[in-house]
Image (cartoon, rainbow, N blue to C red; front, side):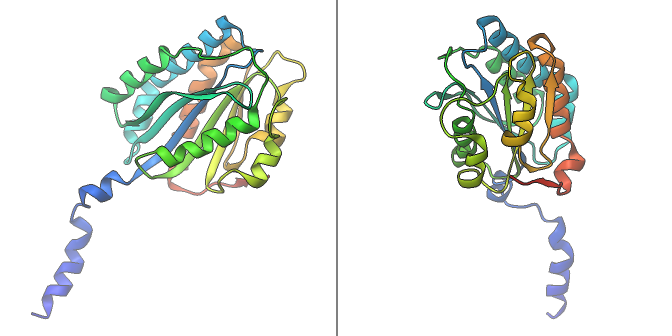
Length: 235
């Protein structure tokens, strides 16, 4: 029957994708990388982890994730010098409060497995980028969030890492916490951030971290940003 191919073509857009195809898709892959080098005190570490957990469970963040058709795959890591990086909350598929709230609770319980080390920013970037290899869902956008309060001083330099080790499809954004000397903001802007639409948010101190990471997450989870390519910061 000659009309069957025509009918099939008309109804094809309305046939749900297979379970396998749906499982292979998500909107955003998000790696949250937290600085635990020696410039971060125990109290400051608690403010950083607590601020991230608070931001993740904020109603506006939950709403933003729910609005993304494919959801978010997220993981959390901590980093110190070039030899110290650790995943502290495994990859979790975030779609709504039923999985976002438990994820935030897990983040709130993050332990400081190491610390009082030098600042291995470049190696932290490499480690975060390679976590995509363990992500069970492929996502349309890849974002690495690096939070820190100091400049690189150990291991490969961030600018060199961008040239040789970082994927071309990833965006690295930064949250810098002011107070250290030298000021980390110019260093993050020049060497750390990069990729489509990369940006830095600035916290005046660790007490300011919670609202700043909230603002940053809302910006990254924007549906309009997810649906359109952004300008690229070239390293």
